[in-house]
Amino acid sequence: NSKVIQTPRYLVKGQGQKAKMRCIPEKGHPVVFWYQQNKNNEFKFLINFQNQEVLQQIDMTEKRFSAECPSNSPCSLEIQSSEAGDSALYLCASSPQGAGYAEQFFGPGTRLTVL
Amino acid sequence: GDSVTQTEGQVTVSESKSLIINCTYSATSIGYPNLFWYVRYPGEGLQLLLKVITAGQKGSSRGFEATYNKEATSFHLQKASVQESDSAVYYCALSYEEGSGYNKLTFGKGTVLLVSP
Image (cartoon, rainbow over all chains, first blue to last red):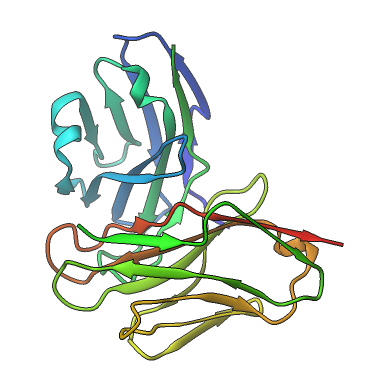
């Protein structure tokens, strides 16, 4: 079973409010991913890190979303000004290596509801 | 961009019967993708079921099998005899070794499997 920890499990925000969620990857996993799963079960990759360094992020992330993975602290994903369309399940995953064939270990997710 | 299409919605199968969940992919990135099946059991997080990184090879786990068919760009999931405990949501996914966004996963929309007693 995955040991990726995500907090909080549920988050409710009003439009325009900040929303912040955290992720503790499995010990020894240097690679961290964030995905968004919307109500239509579509996954969208947001950003990934390797040892605190951003590998890739999508355009959407660059505008309202910010993320970091500081050394010795939880990773975080923050939405600066929440919109209704941001309501989704946010999944954090970690991996022991950066190779594309490596298994990703997922946390339970943070379910964000924007009212 | 890349995309994954799998059997949509819910599939209901009687216990001990066979199962197939179709998965095809459209890959625009360079090279051949790595292919995965992930599963989400009720009340649990997403976890890897099986993976195949070489075209033509078969992966297997917990009685499930999937063969990487690069000609048909398919990776169908099969099981000869399902059990109630297999009831879950199954996701087909792909990733790459190099290129833009190489190691991120591109998922299908998921297939809900309900095994009836």
